[in-house]
Structure formats: structure tokens, C-alpha cells
Length: 91
Image 1 (tube, rainbow, N blue to C red):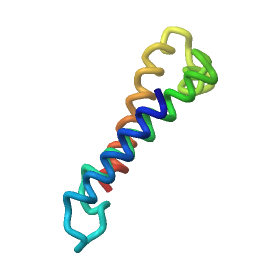
Image 2 (image 1 turned 135 degrees about the vertical axis):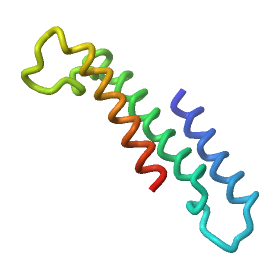
Image 3 (image 1 turned 90 degrees about the vertical axis):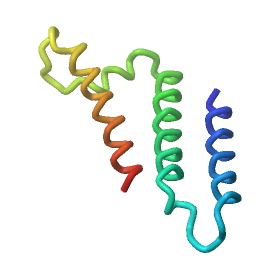
Image 4 (image 1 turned 120 degrees about the vertical axis):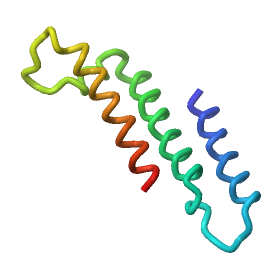
């Protein structure tokens, strides 16, 4: 599965390079940086779930969080990771 995601990212990079002229770098296009950023985020989560199973969710819970807030904190932390990826991808 990871290989398929990486292969799609590799193909997207080369298609973008081929479609554009050689007058500028490929990372000028926002789709290039976003596709690399999103591919990396998906790969990190996928590999994390493969190696740590559901214990990966413990990384999203700050120390001392009340038990009732744990589901909300997991969702908010994952949303923060996705938002950070998108914002850095657009930079």
C-alpha cells in the first residue's frame, strides 16, 4: 500500500515536470508541494498504524488530559497535523 502511494507521488512529480517547461523549478507549482506534503503525511500515518496499531493514537493525547476529552483531543490533534501539512505545503 505504501509503495502504491509513493508510486503515485512519483508519477505526479514526473508528470508535473514533463508538462511544464524547463524555465522554472517544479516546486513553483502549489500542486507539486501539496502532493508531496499530503503523500508524506499519509505515508507517516499509514506506517505508524502498521507498526504501532492503535497505540499511535496515544501520541495525539497530551499528558494529563481528562478521560472525557480524549476522543475530542485525538480528533483535534489529527486536524492540527493535517492543517500544518497543508499550510507548510502551500508555503
